[in-house]
Every structure is written in structure tokens, then in C-alpha cells.
Amino acid sequence: MSKDNKEKRIAVLDLGSQTFRLTIVRCSEAGIEIITSRMVNVRLGSGLSKLPILRPDAMKRGIDTLRQFKTVMDRLNVDRSYASATAALRIAMNADHFLEMARKEGIDIEVIPTEHEAAIAARGVVHTLPGLGTGAGIIDVGGGSTEFILTRKNTDPLRHSIPMGAVNVTENFLRHDPPTPSELSYMDMRIRPTVSSLLQNIEPRPISLVGIGGTATTLAAMSLEMNEYDPKRIRGLELSLDEITDWINRLKKMTTRQKSDIPGLQSARADIILAGAWIMRMSMHMLGFPVITICDGGLLTGLLIRAIEKEYCNNVEPSSTRGIYL
View 1 (cartoon, rainbow, N blue to C red):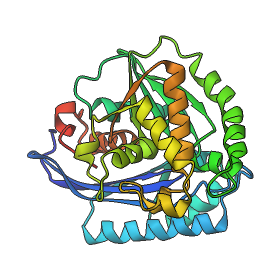
View 2: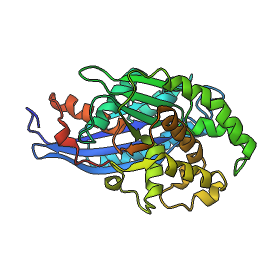
View 3: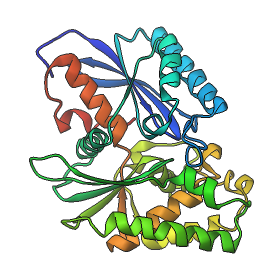
């Protein structure tokens, strides 16, 4: 795998607006082995759509989670860690305060520029799905934004983004539990022009469509009625527009408590899955795709690839990562 034969334990942290994720791998000439993977629903970006300041309770949840991750990394004798953050810490005016709190816990965080995030996520997908060619469209409905990435041959991917995701759309438009018909109608009216402006300028048009991130993988887990999340079953699963519409029609009539009982739907994501599914369905419809392929790879996989390459000064080939499930 590399010019350096030394075995290393590398930790990668993906700190999103909704979830914080930790993966620790053992790298050697034998390959890449997952030691542990953790995911915590932190919701660091809660409230950012109304005021671009991280809330004290959100920062506390974030720092508590980083402290837990650091304990795990120390216990497993990690040689090097790489922590990267995305939208929430790009937007928040008090992000420096959170970054300093994290440093005091022994974790230095890199805030990834938006254009770099797209390239890293696209690489994670390409290294995960065999046969994914140039011209694939990738949709990631996150907590605070929705990203559309178009892979291109021998050059960086095209990236388009809107500041609408599952968390801030829920906070801004869905006030009742379950939401009222007028709330749903107003939400649709408000997000439709923004999603349309994102997608109508995509050129060239994608030849295939891939869904990554929490909204996509959660809908897949729900479709498979998973009591325990299994990324091996998620990767490559196809969800139809009709199936997502059926889920929306069910979810919009349910309370958060009722949704928490759905197999495959984590209770911490139950209140926001409707908004995330709504954005995904709208995107598929506007792009003219009746089916979307779900991929468990994405930003975290791309961050892992980048970290290994930094450590070993050598390229990681797709054949080395397609058997890895985070």
C-alpha cells in the first residue's frame, strides 16, 4: 500500500451539522482494517438558520462528544487523528470559540472549504461504488445544506449548494407535530424555487444519481426495515421516487414519537427525516430520475482516504477501500 511499512492506527472525525462521526483504522501492508466506527447525533447546527451563532447547548453536546471520541482514541492507541468540520463551523460567527474548546480537549479541527468538501465527498463515493463513471450526480441532503456534486473526468467535480437541509427546513417551517397541511404546503412553496435554482443550472446533466449522507442512508435503512444499521446492505441499494413518495405520505401524518418506532429510523433523526425526504424527492423529480442509488460512502470515506495518503505519501486505490464499510 505504501513505501512506509510501519503499521499505523489512524482516526478520522467528520463533524457535521447534524452528526459527529469517528472511524479508527489500522493500516499496514495487509491493507486497511476498521477497528471501530462511532456516530453521535449532536445537531451542532441547531438554530443557525435563525442566528449564525452556535448555541451553548449545541456546543456542549459537541464538546462532550469530542471528549468521548478522544477517550476512545486514547484507549485504542491512535497514532494520528484528523478532525474535519463542515457547514456549521463555516457559518457560525462564534466558531473560533468552539475550535478553541476542542483544542483544549486535544482535538485540532480543520474547517473544510466548501469546494474542497465536494471533491473529498466525490472521491469517497467513487472509491466506494464500483463502476461509477464520470458524469454521476451526487446529492447529499445534510442538516444545514443540500449539496449537489457532478463528477468529471480528469478534473475537480462541479459543486452546487443551497443553505437548506433537514434540520433548518424543519426548524423554519414545520412547527406542529405532526405538521399541518398548510405548513407542508408553505414549506414546499418556500424550498421549491431554491432547489430549482440549484438544479436547473447543472450542466452537463448527470447520467446517474447517487444519494449520500444521513437522509439517504436513513431512507434506505427504513426501506430495509433495519433494526441494526448494516452499511453492507445499504451500499448500492436503489430507491424509487415512488417509494420515497410513499414514505413521505406516511411520515407527514405521524408524530415524532410514532416515527421513532419505524425500524431503521433513529429516534434522534425522527423529527427531521420528513424534511430531508421532501428535499430528496423534489431533487429527483426536477432532475428527472425515477431511481436513486444509495451509497454509504461519501465525505467520511473521502476524509479517510485523504488521511491515509497524508500518512503514507502514496495514493489509495479504489480496490483498497471498496471492502470498507464505515
